[in-house]
Length: 512
Ligand SMILES: O=C(O)C[C@H](O)C(=O)O
Ligand code: SF4
Image (tube, rainbow, N blue to C red; front, top):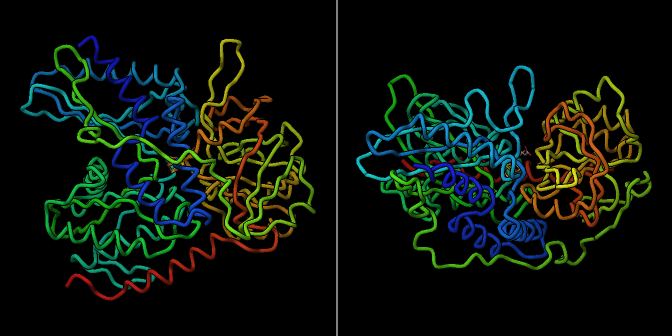
């Protein structure tokens, strides 16, 4: 078993940096369904380019490398204690190599362990089987999509859809609602795993296990196969689109499983996974620890060819592209309208949950007047000369900062907030009052954005940990779309309302 640790390191690296063929295929098909010049088309081109860059750079597809979760089948008698130890060593090494972001945070103190280890981490589920080799599957599911998981207890009343009863039609309504409530915040277009039955714990577990199924398989249960097909069709009529920009593709995959329940409970649990659906698996020789083969790569003859054309060069007629250099004036900001593509140059500052909370009662360490805040927790590594390098740096879900953002914009004179998924009414009002905009970057496009970062000027609050620290970054050609402007317009509010109306069209029973 000497090679086991090295095999796990390979598995982690591959999972973080290289999407499996079934996921790539789903994204490729989605791209064909969107007009290249639309916002969704631009987003999908950026995503495709990012997938390719991650593979070439052997760097994280998305900066949020999630909560590493291993599902392991072992022959009877295999030493699980030894395997756990080697998995932990591989996790630490993958973190040092920048294949994983240091993502393990003490829930009480907020301290980042720095090596991805911690209480309850990594997650490892062992099962025994009769075969003589080991199977290890790994999923790296980030926080933004995890936050969009949802569990329904039937019967219930659902916004737009009415009563959902304890039957297949009630289940159908819950799943459609789950896609609607995620909007673009979990980096749509997404994949969902659904667990019917169980209790609150095993229901969610079953939902997550569905994500290990290949995106192109067929459910062996004919009723569930029909439901999967129906959901794929109906959910893609909600027009939420990639990143919640509106569009024809909202859902890339739907996998449903069922287990028994007890009479009083009827749960429908939905695990939402972003397009950056990072899961891989290997078979490992139980004597040597060497990899025998890769699970999701079998029978895949297709190459990994993605779109290599520069993402934002495809422009729809009428789409304005505006180049801005920081610091930005109020006048420049008030010129911008929802739908404009902004190409940003100059110094920007990262800030997410810990920083926003801090800034409410403290001064900023740098002058933020007319400046730009980027909701981002990057993967950073020091090079041989001790200088910080940006390894992955896509946006994080902005709505978490909704309780703080309006006050921060006002207090510090911020002109642009970059993030993804949009923000709420309070921030929208502050943008209008103080002359600022919200720029939606393409979620998960961590390589694409890291490439725009020309220099790390410095960092504050390293005590918050790498993802939560305030990084001061010079960018060149950073492209994002205005989705909330200084005139009270919000694409997110429009898409939400439109998709809620579409959802209501699926109120009538389908499965009797
Ligand atoms: O933590 C992050 O960097 C992003 C997160 O996965 C998110 O989607 O908000
Ligand atoms: S930023 Fe988006 S792509 Fe990355 S983990 Fe979060 S939800 Fe997934």
